[in-house]
Image (cartoon, rainbow, N blue to C red; front, side):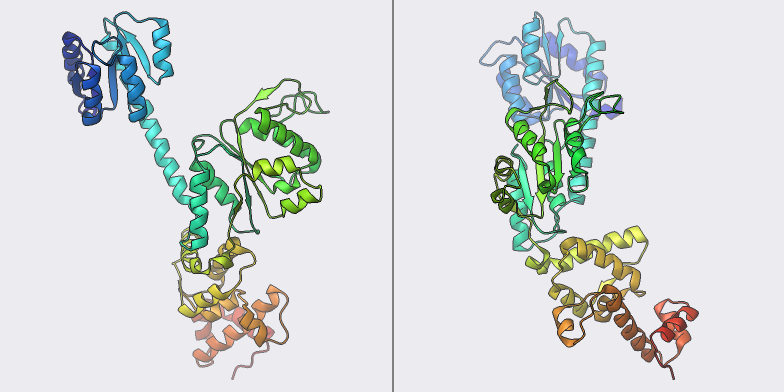
Length: 456
């Protein structure tokens, strides 16, 4: 069992024969083993040896018995698993050790068969836990907020402070700024990361169904409901419930959420059984909830329970210096998903993108990058390419007396300019132009005819 050499086991017991026999048996199994004779030396050995598993005797002479060692060690070494051993244990002692975080409790004389089973279970659990941590870290990287501008750095700092708490949170901001992404970051950086992140878009659910969607519905509460239907609060147990566009909640649902905040309990629609639940709520809105409170259209109690720490996601125009890195990030994604070669943006193209106001914020930028990849045949994106893809800045608007009102009109004009430029670059040779820009010759002829382009 040479693979066991990667695992370290520490034995802390005041009886030398126990230490010697157990050490020899575990070494025969291929484990790396160390031993200590009392609590004080045991704690020191944990610090120096860095074991995966500790077999810890409960009754030991000296300043620290096993329970005291366990209590201190669990705080200092949270990733180490402890198995308690004793020659005269009681149920009370076993329960106390388990509450302090011990993995298991075994009695002397020790059974090597039982010890082998315990070790196998502990190591399997540790491997599974490590795999979950790796997956969680990978997920955290995939949803990371991109950018280094002061506005987004301040946002990241707020998230880092909020995440470890159990406070309910309200994230405000314009459409497309990344409010949902911020909510996911808060969840996956919190102690609830291993539990469910359940979302519901309150603005898309019919008002008469919102209550049952969130709280669930009991069997027979409505015609056709022949079994209990779990709500989002059921599904989010121990984790986070994300309420997107919380401003759309009905007054009844708002009232019930206030009660849930205060009691940690709720009833399903049509139910009489009180359900206790540990769920954190993160809500988002594009609306001015404070104004809605003043107008009596949103619960003041719920607003203040959500808005403990005001948290507004910055717009993209507040952090234009992040546009190059965001564009690169989205380019990587589009190229990977669409099978494209990654495109390079010229300085002029990027400058135009940084001057554009992006009313749809980060979401609009992401969609725009995808559009550029579809509409630009080459691997180099220049100013005319981003214009062709629909980027119209203030300078373009001033230069055109008849400002184009639709994207279709804008694309048509830029497409015409683009074709004129490419035809000129290729000396009026339509076949060569079609080859260079990646279009069928017949399709290019139709475009030339539709735009009234004269070819000599």
